Image (cartoon, rainbow, N blue to C red; front, side, top):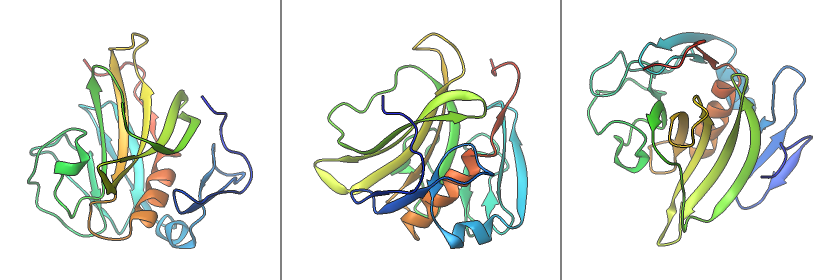
Length: 191
C-alpha cells in the first residue's frame, strides 16, 4: 500500500488537491468551503456502529429508521428511504455521505483506483480510496475503510461519498475527509 500523502499533492485523476495541516491527522482535500462548513459542527453517535463523528452543524443525519442512527449525512433534510449499508449506488440521491460497519470481505475487483492512501482513522490503520466502474465511469466512490476486528472477514468500518448523489461531489469528498479526522471508535466493537 502507498504511504500516507504528505504535503500538498495534486491528483489529476480525482480532481482534487490534498494538503497537510498541522491540526489534522492526515491530508485532506484542500477546500475553503469545507473548512467554512466545519467552523461549527455537531456530533452524533451510532450505538449500532460503535463510533462518534462530527459533521457540519448545517448538515443533517438520520436518527435511525432504515439505516442505523448516525449513518447518512446530507446538506439538506432528507426522508429515510432507500436500501441500507454500504451500497452507495442505491442510496437516495439526496444522501451523499454514508458511514457504517459490516462483516465480510472488502474488495474492488476490476475497479480502477484514482486514489489509494494509508491513513489513521480514529487511531486505527485504514485506507482511503477512490474507485470507479470501468463500465460506468460517471459512478465514482470515495471511501475510507478500517478493520475493527483483526480477522480479515471480521467487523469493518466504512465511510463513503458517491458521485451519484445530488450536489458537489468534490465538496462531499472534502466534508468526508474532515469527518474522518474526527471519528472516534468505542473501546469494544459492536456485537
